[in-house]
Length: 195
Image 1 (cartoon, one colour):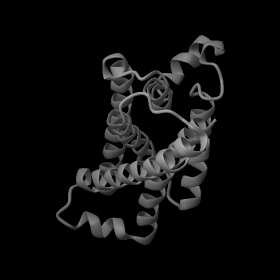
Image 2 (cartoon, helix red, strand yellow; image 1 turned 90 degrees about the vertical axis):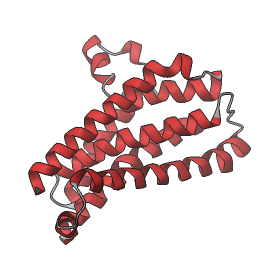
Image 3 (tube, helix red, strand yellow; image 1 turned 180 degrees about the vertical axis):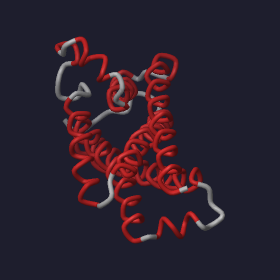
């Protein structure tokens, strides 16, 4: 249950924080100041994603070693280095989704609604609270497009089964590819909106 809660909180934070930060900059006009600086749209968005990755890593480190392991006895049978590297990749993937939502919203209220409409299905259909095998075939294919779907298997593999990258690389690759596609889509929308 502790792992399930951590995954849900990470997912919400990784989407919500970069999305609201980008929309707030649109609302206050600071995005225009960034665009007249020598920074490219890629550098602006990479900085937002990198900040989200650092926040997620710090929060996960604190949650695991400060609460989950000592209080709930959640094991770390695999490599902690691999685990935190995958957490960083997951933060990248979900931050890409947050930036996509930020390009669709004009206000903080709109981005909040978009996050709810997007993240709730991702959480409920990821395999953490419901069995993917019991879903209709079309839904199972759609669920494979969620970074959380792949991240769940990776986390359980590292924490509870002690698996390494040799057995988890297909899921890591899929999650990274989805994140890169989301980031590229957000970057293209960002360029068309502001460039």
